[in-house]
Image 1 (cartoon, helix red, strand yellow):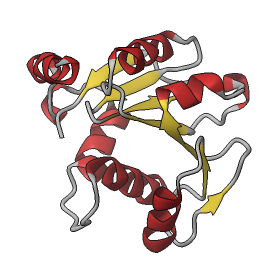
Image 2 (cartoon, rainbow, N blue to C red; image 1 turned 90 degrees about the vertical axis):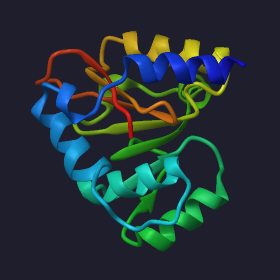
Image 3 (tube, rainbow, N blue to C red; image 1 turned 45 degrees about the horizontal axis):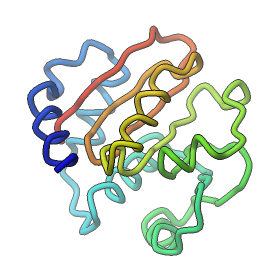
Image 4 (cartoon, rainbow, N blue to C red; image 1 turned 30 degrees about the horizontal axis):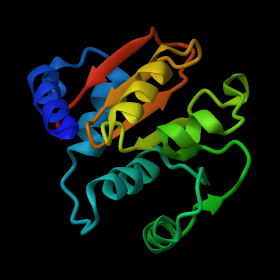
Length: 164
């Protein structure tokens, strides 16, 4: 029931690229997320692969052991390297991200954090809200299926809800 109500709330408040006034986010949405590519993958995996390709990321940190995601990335992004240190992109859940000892001050300006299942349950949703408020998080993109965090120091703090 929680997910159903969350989806209705999301759809009532989300926008498409026309509601985005940030050039960075607008380009990401139109040139990456909305780009028509045939990737026969689950939606979060598709967002992950498209983002790696769009931003030309070279390294990823998986916050939990996920052989399915590792295999998928090796197949679709053969140049990506896996690390346990700070990486270009960090992938996990809100609980994984909050439980890991990640010093956000040390993350690169262009690091992206992709968090799966931000509306999976009330706890995940509450964790997502906490992460959006963190000082070093400058841009958040809520895609319902997952959430994205960016640490772009040159950008004002903004939150976006985008329908995909």
